[in-house]
Length: 131
Length: 145
Image (tube, rainbow over the protein chains, first blue to last red):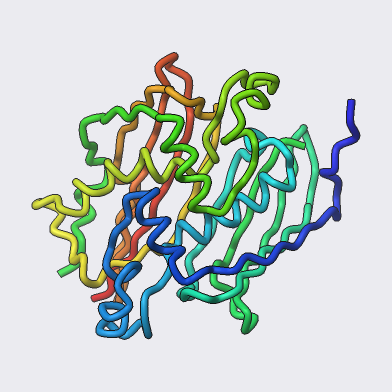
């Protein structure tokens, strides 16, 4: 049996570049074609300063970072967040996580997701994983 | 006028979604994920799941078809131009395997009226073809007034 990486205080940090067309790929995959995500002109018109990434794509990146770290996507049991600031194309997001508690075969991971200016684009981000 | 709290508990008829393998892969690519659990049939056969599985947030794909009719519900009459996604919560029970047939049902879990905004929380419960729980998702949308 491999020793679990999931112990109190264990942490990870991964950068994710949001390329120019990411919202379009995510629109195709998820079905969320809201013009605020795929049309920069529309995004400007409604005061967003251009197209913004789907919040659930940011949360998808966060989940991906977690499941890559866990090595088994089935170990992710709970995930929640508040969408606190828009993500624009060509932003660089940093996903950081720390195990804050382990009990009863489950671990709680506290996460932060920030952009290149240090602004938290998601808040109250936490996950529960199989330890 | 705010969203009427009398709609808390309102349900919509269940919808089914077949989780195709290539759709799973398309979604994994969109979140820039290269995990062989999603892409490599030979690798997947040797895992405890025995098949290609979907990333946890693939829940968005089978959930989307339930959210849309709620957005356009005449009774609820949500102001979509002022609506943003406020919060998200997922609970994952059993993984989704390629070709699983998923049945989801939507319920309005909460409606809150505040001075400057209303919020509406939609709960989606998903089961697979074996009757096992797959996912509970709570999508909270905020509507500015």
